[in-house]
Image (tube, rainbow, N blue to C red; front, side, top):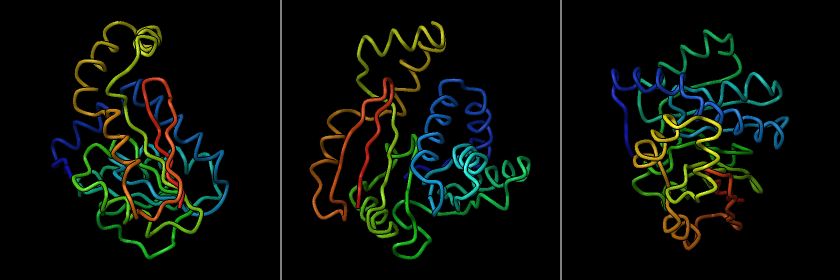
Length: 213
């Protein structure tokens, strides 16, 4: 697990809030969640500054939105963002990790994690823990940047965001925050996770792993 300390958390949150590439992903995730769930409980794991759950809370008033992060500084930043957005009563942030989720068994209908999975030191154990807090037929959605984008992916990135941002994403962001095909295959090979279905969706520069309990 990787925890971002106070000053680093503040800098990271400012960068994320100004990155059209990341913000477009957050918007897409929120839209997918709201199409899937109009009511029930969701959990965002590794929430960072809380932008994904806040987008969800603003769109889907029938959802109970909870989020956790292993960085106390990030939890503070996310909580402040919720207050500024007037969403403190609809989105809850607290300390926690994928290895130790502070909720009871069979609590959530859906769990999501965005650009966080590559930090999980013990992914197999983490996935078992997520399964524990999901209801029967509940799902986990994992969103990550592709480590091996196609030429088509690269060209689309440059078309949408220009040469400078696409260069930064491909050479710096991807180097630190991405998942390779080997890792995806490894996840698909795990046994006894508590999930009966594991699928992969290609989303251009991103990949989505969908695990159903």
